[in-house]
Amino acid sequence: MYHEVSQSQSPAGRLVRDSFDRDYVERLKQGDAATERHFTKHFGDLLRLKLRARMCSVDLIEDLRQETFLRVLTALRRKDGLKCPERLGAFVNSVCQNLLCEVYRSKSRTDYGSSDQLEVLDDGASPEWALVNEERKCQVRKVLQDLPSKDRELLRMVFYEEADKDEICRRFGVDREYLRVLVHRAKARFRKELLERHGDGFYAQA
Amino acid sequence: MRKRNVSECPDLLIGGYAMDHAEAVGMKAAERYLLGELSPRDHEAFEEHFFECTECAEDVRLGFQFRDNVKAVFSEDPQPVWRPERSSRRRTWLDWMRPLMVMPAACLLLVGVIGYQNLVTIPQLRSSSAAISQPEAVPSAVLAPSSRGEAPAIFVPAGAHTFHLQLDLRPIGHFEKYICDLRSSSGATLWKVPVDTLDPAAGLHLLVPAKSFSPGSYDAVLMGAGNGNNVEIDHYRFDIRRP
Image (cartoon, rainbow over all chains, first blue to last red):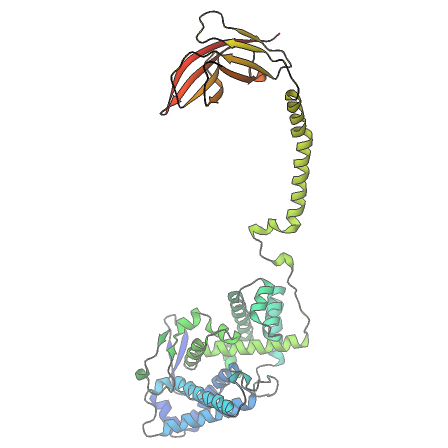
């Protein structure tokens, strides 16, 4: 990879962890354009996932991402900087987490209600997500077609209808672990389809 | 998962717990994250983990991608593809108690019981009650204890249900209770009759089912029981004869 991110290996030999080193952080501090591009792309995606899981709106996600980048870079350029450069990922996450807390407190003060009432993300609103496209839908259709009809309906209830999971489990006579395993296996099939189509580089397109 | 020591990384602005990769994989944290099943503590720990772990970050990204495309596919065809059916329910050993199974079985059982009562039990009861509902002469014999002479014979007609034995008693010692065995000539016990009290003046009267005795020689053995032992008191021999 072009950036100085070292990749440690797990005992099984699989790539597990990005470990950002002092040189990478130093280049970020000095405003190296390529390193900044990598930084914003790499952590921009992770921040989107994190904030989507918190049901934030598209606008709020963009605001929080930009504010997180700003605060991280400002912190890095301070005199004392980052004491543990290998923990850059955890640091970015903690900055974003604090920002979220500020938003929740702000919403609460302005009587917007609880954090659960944050504006819900409209998945189709922004082309920037680009997680859905015709090709991927086709691959997902293939995965769904290979599933037993019961499992297909379970996925429909969980992801499309977003029904209460306990109620789904009761109706279908399965437990929560069955749902997890079903999602895990379907996802593995989806990954296989993507790999067969694009090879190892498909993640870069996500 | 371990509680993170703040001093181990002062850059982190939040406290909390640290999750390692093995833990994340073991608990299917990526699936739980996607399904919204992680506790707040695990949620934060897993987020911190996948910000540093390429594999878990890819797993989370793939999960969101899969979910979004599943939604898109079903939004184009929202019809349910499968309805849970009764037969899909996991069977248990209690299933036989369901009304569908129990009612026919109960009806069959009821028919069986009623049929048996009408065909067997009630006729038997009528027969036996008829036997005792009116006076009837029964074959009878008076037996003396340990008689050395010829044993008294009892002529039992073919239709007789019972015969009567009267055992004369000699003065006997006191026992907690008494037993009278009816034995065949070979010594096999055919009947064992418990007797609570004995009145030597009145003797011991036994009404015996006739069908249990084919023609032959028999022995009535009177025993006293106490302290776990049976003591033979007297023997009474008799013969059964059929016309």
